Length: 255
Ligand SMILES: NC(=O)c1ccc[n+]([C@@H]2O[C@H](COP(=O)([O-])OP(=O)(O)OC[C@H]3O[C@@H](n4cnc5c(N)ncnc54)[C@H](OP(=O)(O)O)[C@@H]3O)[C@@H](O)[C@H]2O)c1
Image 1 (spheres, rainbow, N blue to C red):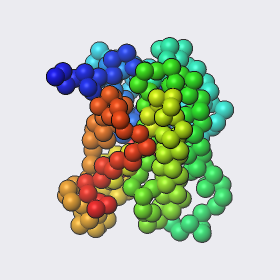
Image 2: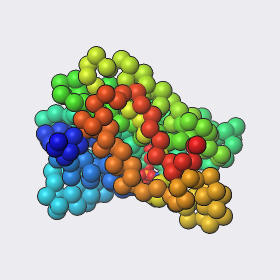
Image 3: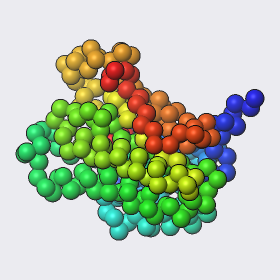
């Protein structure tokens, strides 16, 4: 058995949002290493250019395309540029997310609610919609939505973020059901605490970490590479019978 072919992304084109650092970049890197041509996207052109360069230096095919996914009018151009660069889209990873507030939900303004929902949910919906004509032409299309364990059970102080991540899980299941006929698989990953910039306030605080560690079966924070590996499983033929799944990678936090 040729194990490498099971996880190969040869001939595939992947679009990854929020790919200038953290989990998004690691997903882009492992996809490129598996043979995919990758478009890395985030708000800043310079940031994605630098990270695409980093991949090209390793001999991979990668390009950076700036796009603020919270600005719906920018999304069609992101899809058009991806197709102009590589001719197709087989894999979409909705990874970019924001969490600008911490505190009780009743103190959160409608404006902040809208911002979180735009980036974390509406952009995923719109990118799925815009990529559909390309995904349905693929012989192995996969959409991966990066949710959170906060979408399974609300996290303290992260109310609206948790609501947005729960909506993303529901979006995943709805699209998976509707797109099964088109041979497009749609799955979600729910990371627990992963050591990135996004979660620095948690893992850099010894007191908070002490509390979290007590609830973890695996007594450490996770790494972006560990989420990248799960994303490769979902993007590749290794998961060809998996759709609508919600996979946790949380060190056993939710057990
Ligand atoms: N780290 C964790 O513990 C954890 C746990 C559960 C779930 N997650 C989820 O994992 C995903 C990635 O998080 P991370 O920890 O890797 O975060 P990160 O290291 O802070 O990276 C976030 C990425 O998103 C981009 N981004 C932010 N706002 C954007 C926007 N409006 N439009 C386009 N790109 C945007 C950032 O780039 P620019 O600044 O260049 O735009 C960056 O590339 C998120 O969906 C997050 O909710 C993370």
